[in-house]
Image (cartoon, rainbow, N blue to C red; front, side):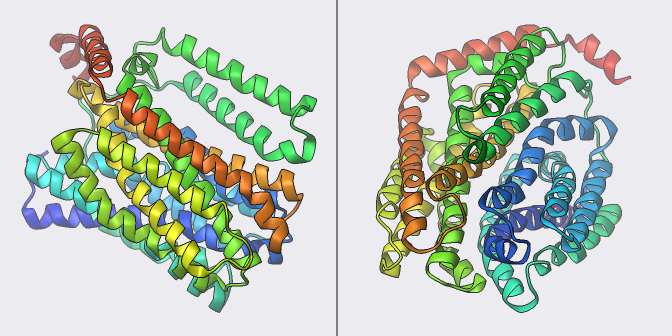
Length: 485
């Protein structure tokens, strides 16, 4: 690919950030719309869980496949296809006649969304070849994450209060169309020198594992936690996980190589991502319902209240990145874990009449933890890995974040549903939500412990041994050349 001018590179970065903006906003916007969906579509609590989890479940299932497909067929082509599908899915969501249709169209959105952020990051890393410029571009990318989190609830709240919940999906359409056109004009096409082969069976195992586990958790309050359907679905998820590991161990180009998990920092980053994003998505789910159903706030007022979450991410993520670069991942992980724990302790005591300052204090503390979380996850996942495996390792970390988001809403929602049996208001809701806040505390404790265990000398040695094994298994230069011919 020929060297692009600086102006062209900045345009490419802006176009890629447009995709991140609509995907990031979409996640938080839908949370603000939960009360409107409950009222307009007569949605139960489990229905509301599915409006969130149908999206994140498909996203988590397809991220790895979408990344490898883009490497094979072309990153710009995949990026434009993802934008088109996401935009179409947004239009369909805005026209959904019922809850079932909305869930189905959210899955369409997710198919497109899986082709956006990981592919956009691949485009950025291929366009920005200078190390300093690439660091700047990734910093801008991280800043847009914070902006999207902050804009989502506020823009969503304004749209819901003015034109209704369907308006939250309209905003994606003009941005998506503009990004498709701009990508065609300014984003160069690129492919991997040696793209990985498709792994259809491995992908199928991932989908079955995540879908059955999520369905079992969400539907357990209705069907019973020890009922035959619930236990049967969990058993299917376990069998799919075991089959995935056994099958991937034998493949030359696995979707997810089990060898990665021989590195303690990598395995720890994966668990940390699941715990951290589980706590984050569960927290958003609880508070959206609390602010609107219990305190009686409008969608816009609820969105403004969650602004501290975005500010913490925007301000602290770059600081966390610098600490990771200079001192390692331990300190940011400890701060993240302790922040989640402290926020959980503050928010577990909320009632329908708690002062607003208590709620905002919990949000600020939580934002400190969440703002420190992302850089050490990515760094620990790729640390010590050979360069030809770094992209795959980062993709697994991204998938783990979405798995955590899916399980967070599923678990927290089911805990509340088991305690209240419906979308409740007042004391019934706050009493039912207390166990969910203890889960957030537990997630924070797990992150803090992992921050200590996965950053010591023993952990680093396991990463070095895993990297050595990947280097031994890497194809010879002649084989790579033959594969790219």
